[in-house]
Image (cartoon, rainbow, N blue to C red; front, side):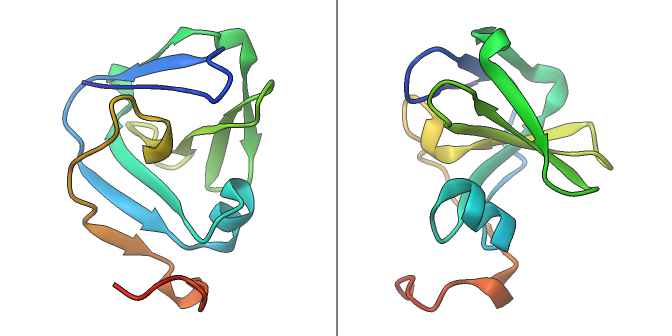
Length: 121
């Protein structure tokens, strides 16, 4: 089981079940949403995802016709991304997990827009 929370601590969530894969997404929407070179996510089944505290603080933004991004309206922490085409899964942000994620990151997405200033592996 994964557990996570936002920066201000107002929102806490859990995600039960296995991580299907973890990824770094370099799409320009993730870059803008995270204010960083990539958004890093663990993909899990949405049936096991639950907001345990602060559901009233979670806002979702339809960033495209394919996805919605959830964040805390108080501190702005990005919490998850969900596909509107694949509602059976949800991607929780690795940076919000407690304890920190220690599994492998198997995928890099949208590498054609990966910033040149990111370090080389």
